[in-house]
Amino acid sequence: MKNVEEKGKKKSKFLGALYLASAAIIWGVACTVGKAALAVMAPMPLLSIRFAIAFLIFLLFALSRESIKVPLREIPLLALVGLIGFPLSIGAQFIGTDLTNASLASIVTATSPVLIGIFAWMLLKEPMGARKWAALGTAIFGMILLAGLPVLQGRIDGKGILFLCLAALTWALYTVLGKKAALGHSPLVVQVYAMGFGLLGTIPFGILGWRPLPPPSLSLFAAIFYLSVLSTALAFYLWNLGFTMLSSGTGALFFFLQPLVGVFVAWLALGEKLTIPQLLGSLAVLVGIFIALGTEK
Image 1 (cartoon, rainbow, N blue to C red):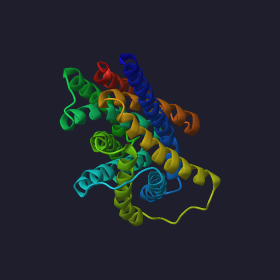
Image 2: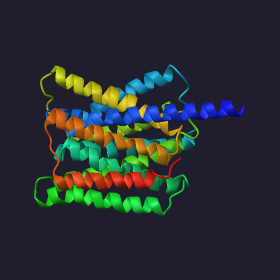
Image 3: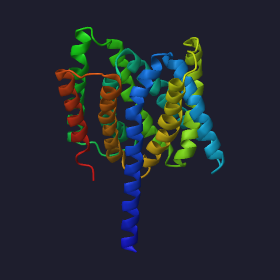
Image 4: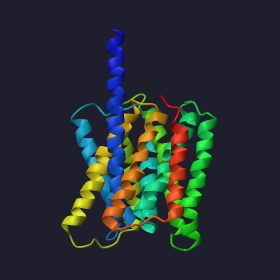
């Protein structure tokens, strides 16, 4: 019996790791895809279209598998998860990427794992030792080194960095609140409500920022498909599902894959380059992440 339980735990950990790694890799590519799409569409209208398609996919999939009814008292938490995770976090990332570049967006948002550990300590009472506090300081130093010099030299819009920092902060909060909401519901049900409220919160900004749509093209359709179906519907579901199988600290480690993939794809597809200070800042951010997560079992 004990061996069966151990095998079950190992399988659960493996699947959790697989789901989280897959989501992070998809998002790493999405930074470059999003940057290309933003060249022809405004951030918030693109985000509204992305969320509308993803919500429809989630809703149809959920209705075919299970009941999506939840007690009325739990709606506020689900609404908070959706509003923080979608119009606020993803919207800030879109705007920040539009004002900076795809590789920088990947690296700055990679500080989320450290922040996830802090929010998990505050909201879920998961342990937060001295090493994680040290990790936060290291990551912040890396952020300053990564973004400070380009901003001072006028090569990177300071507002873009602020939006990316906001994206990292709210993404961490979304992840922890989503895990809390999933304690009583399946990840699919949580995602349906979160995406629905997220869409409602995004539509007004999409209307305000609306611009005439560009001529239809295969590349634009491919970008919208990737961002809505793969990067939102599939990746968000895998991310939330993975966190039900692993602790917040361990699961957060897999977000580290996003900047690695994002920087490589941005270099390969967009020809973006990183300066020495940015590389050192990236290293400091990643060191901070590893310090925070190095003690996880």
